[in-house]
Image (cartoon, rainbow, N blue to C red):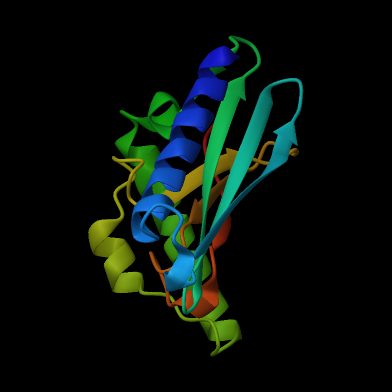
Length: 167
């Protein structure tokens, strides 16, 4: 839909404006770079999900994702709040599932590090501006994806958790 194209265009323009301000409008003596790529993550009878991957490079690099979802039955863009906004029990179940996966991953490999107390205290799934995204995989499984540095150190990248839901 045209609305999704406009949202993506606005989002990309904000990223580019930030880059140009950081580099004094193209004077790249700061040796900064930004790249925006996209992937189609899901394209089923029910869902279409497009993922934008933003990579910012300075002395080191940072990567984060932005997902856009279209419910094909309505041709509407859908957010997490549209699906689970008032369902506090479901959001609590999702959070506990993620924390359990983090604990299991840390037990299995001591190179895996998550800030579980931070997740318990600060991740509420009430705001989609907290550094996380979601998507439905081709098999219908719900995935929650966190931006780099939100739930663990940079070595963890952008953690992706497949979670169980009642839907």
